[in-house]
Length: 262
Image 1 (cartoon, one colour):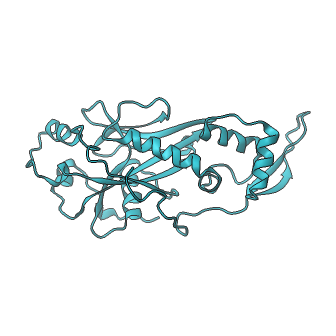
Image 2 (image 1 turned 30 degrees about the vertical axis):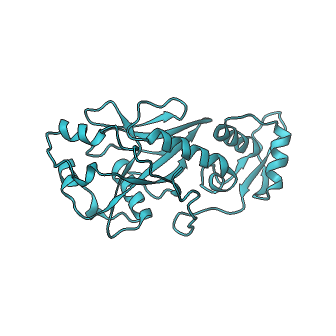
Image 3 (image 1 turned 135 degrees about the vertical axis):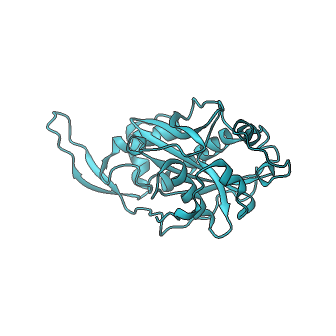
């Protein structure tokens, strides 16, 4: 993925002065992290505000939505090359009514007219991805002071409607776990059935009987069985598996699962 360097805004004032954004459209990236059977989400903390948010931003007139999501994610976290899946649009009238932008501008001593574009209604397009959070080096941008992982069931106070975006993203992962998660390069190329079961249990929030889980997964015909994993222990060596296909961000496009506000 190639990020356009010319679009990055180094200060909040530069962002406010920009006039070539698409009106009323933004993107927000819900990045879930999986490690040691814990599911977390990557959040940013605003300067001078006790609020956290998803990595998000606005869409330039000369870029596609996916390009905007990739650019915003890189500017906010330095993460790039992720498989980003567009999963929902959010357009409730009151979704931005907690005055985050007004407070942020006031704290920075920036004065803008009440009818400025940043105060207007925005519909946001949600993208999600699932990665091993221990492998991600993340950095705050000019508008944020912290970039941290939080467990999905223990979120801090969120800006806008970002808690709802996270909840909807998690629901999407659960509904599409057999395709989206399995194809996202989350697990190593070769893994045991136990590894895969731990992933499913973490995402779905429920436990499975080992034999029932294996029978169900094998019936989906999404795995190739490889050699056994011999680790020198007295236990029976498990088989290794790999997914039949891999999804790559640059070559696969999927339709929006929900193209109207709910």
